[in-house]
Image 1 (cartoon, rainbow, N blue to C red):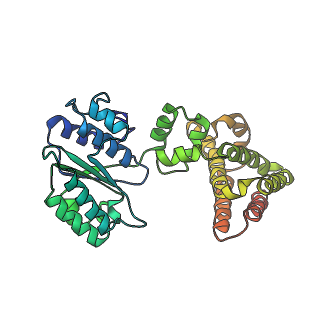
Image 2 (cartoon, helix red, strand yellow):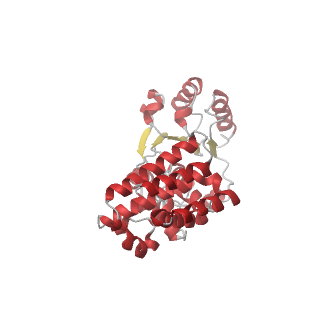
Image 3 (tube, rainbow, N blue to C red):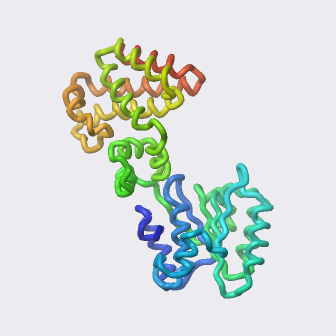
Length: 326
């Protein structure tokens, strides 16, 4: 993917494309921001642009270097990810050996991308610092971190900061629909994950569409058909694998009750279950907003019970009782 194709993150793209246009590429960049904000995707797009021979502010996608990159045949790109919970000294030493080995052409640029640079051990960080200060060849380091403050200050001070901001739900929804993801599923997923990648994973999860359908059924039955709601819980959670996805089910149920409040407040465009607008419009005002808030609270309590090792079916059956009682 080209930099231009990265959704959002205009500030980050502006910094990187300016460096490409001006030819003033830093020896090290620190991409910092929350999980799910496209740091790795942007790092790969920037790396491809660095190898591209077209001389523009983005990869052309057509030159030999771009084709090599897209086919995974770029020998001057090195990626590092944590070995277990941290990036270790041995990995930095291996990087140094790899870069030295590949320096047959001293003018050839080398690029390495380190995921979770804020998870380096102290020994690894000190070794990387020396490597940043004394590269064996023209090298660009792209360090990815969730928190800049967790990176060794001397490394952060020697790197060009590139900020990554959380995506809004609207930006994520727009990006997912552009990928031809199912709009109704995407509309729900962007409220359940912290980024586009996480939202995409939820959409592609087996049974997500079915879980959404169960939530709609429970949401409707919990209002006036208590016995039917209990039967739904018993049938759906005992005879399928929905029990394993109970937290996802409850998270969606919270969104269902929140939609009632959105409709009452005249914010139907913010509703998740937009395909149920007709039913919601007929029932949202049958209860005060405080009732829907209490429904959300009861649902969150049920999720907490499951985390405390209460059986999902029991927790959700008790939730149906509480919802009936108001």
